[in-house]
Length: 411
Ligand SMILES: Cc1ncc(COP(=O)(O)O)c(C=O)c1O
Image (cartoon, rainbow, N blue to C red; front, side, top):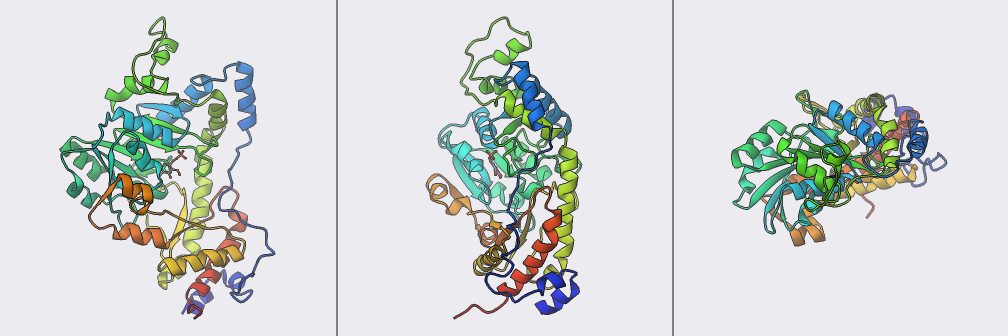
């Protein structure tokens, strides 16, 4: 059957160029899973920050980046942070959680989604994800709400927005905060509205694996005006220094709890070079994503793998391209086979509810069968700016790896 699939594909020549044995293709240069993209102006802007003699945070570049985020992501206020993790920790502080309060979130996510709330003594209540997008299953959220529930945290997995209208209605009905972990979702849209503008609070990431980067970096996005003042104070070590910089007070002092959440101007300068190019970066990533999607369609048609599913009302941001294999054994063989061809692919995620800390700090609500299945069968393929020249080789490699996966296991 797979032979027939291969025969339909323009990648046949690559895929047929040798038997699916170990070591095949190793003479080719390794294709990394991720490669950070530099726009070319990062060092120029860092030199400007250096010349400005303002190296600490909250300077010209910080404000430029925050203005850009406010304009392009439709939030009321953006505050740059060291990481998305730090932005989530700020969101947890703003939520004023008490020990034992509960936060509903997916288990199919990165650890920071839960950790930020565990640091405040809250209990993560894991709910299963949708089988199409692997985002929080909005139909299962209400069953998880108890008198201790304070917030719902959604993740826009792979830069595909979760079902925000339904989730917002649930949050409003029960008086809960809706927090977006939009780490992966810069410039994605839900029904024409930007990810990050849809919850009360949102967090995005500029980690070097993301679409727009500053090494480590992130931002807290504030949509609900009741958090505006306190967020600025938390951000600047619990002081009203930001108000001083705006000329609203004549000295600054300790007002509230807080920490040092803001990055230096050097990081903001780097980030500015990236934000300037964000639309072009998005277009190029979408092109690579579409190339994968089109080329792998025959494999999906034949039931060999499953491709990502994008709901028609969502605009994704091509943050990552994944495929789903039949299960853990098939996926392990698939990743190994790609590795033998010098193509680095990785899985996502060890579900949090089955991790040691997830079991210690959290609990599940209902079955986690979709999460467990995704955790065993999902593989991310390399996707970075400049990958286009390698795509024919990777796609041929996927076809070849699929052939291995469908062979019977050695006894
Ligand atoms: C869904 C999600 N949340 C949070 C994070 C943490 O981001 P950062 O590395 O910027 O702290 C990541 C990073 O991969 C992520 O994918």
